[in-house]
Amino acid sequence: MRPVDLLLAVGVNLAWGLNFAVVKLGLGEMPPILMVGFRYTLVALVLIPWLKWPKGKFLQVLGVSFTLGFLHFALMFTGVSGVDASVAAIAVQVQVPFSALLAYILFRDTLGWRRTGGIALAIGGVVLIAGGPNAVHGGGADPFYVTLIIMAAFAWAVSSIQVKRIGTIGTLTLNAWIALLAAPQLMVGSVLIEGVTWTTVTDAGWWAWIAVVYMALAVTVFGYGIWYHLLQRYQVSQLIPLSLLAPTFGVIFGIVLLDEAATFEKLFGGAMTLVGVAIVTLIKPPAPKETGPKPDGAA
Image (tube, rainbow, N blue to C red):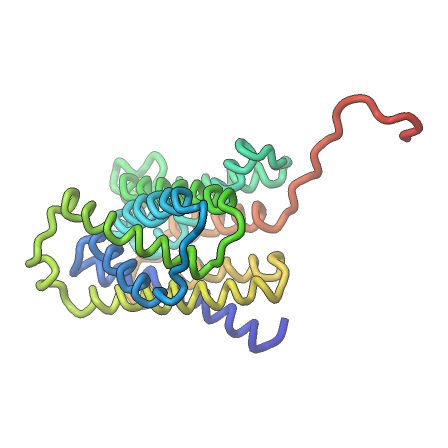
């Protein structure tokens, strides 16, 4: 990998990791679903030039906009509002094991004992972060909000399957449509669920708007734009290990910038989760076993 591309890959993951701390600050001044609604509104405005009609695929794109744009981010941001940013950065990584499980169920992708062990390790790490049995006594993160983040990770995994079934469509075009369709869903959802009013918007402080702009431009437009460009130049196996830098940066920024506690549950559970995710991501699934009689002459 060229040094400049390596720096770009690290820079993208740095931006994604910092996002958890920025969002946490913004959520202190604006309700979570409303914040995501403004984020997607800004993304839709920026990506208007790529808003081409998805011929024959509009309903599928609409489905992705609900699963990813509404469900995933509404659950994710609400979860982040109740836990440390560093906890959220780790807990959401179970989206990778969830994707592997769904691929196994829906597409009969093989798992193998190593990847199955990785899934168990990742989930076990999140359970430890949430405090396990000690959570009811005040240990670990709030299990309710951690559960919301886990549900958000599952919604992300489902959306990945939906995108795979859509097939060929421009990345920027897909992101533009998701943003355009998800923004009104989130705004209506914010009114119904969070009870926001115009005063809620006008009372929002600077951190709320900084978070909206940062998520739209640094995370979505810059981050995903650069990442997809790198995916076209390099093999996935070269880039996936670097993607583990994002949750690592998320933990570091949460502890350094937000003065979050570096507890045993957070550090050891986070390490378990990242190792489990690495195993699921980096180890290739075993080839499916052949069934039925062998052809004549086969060894």
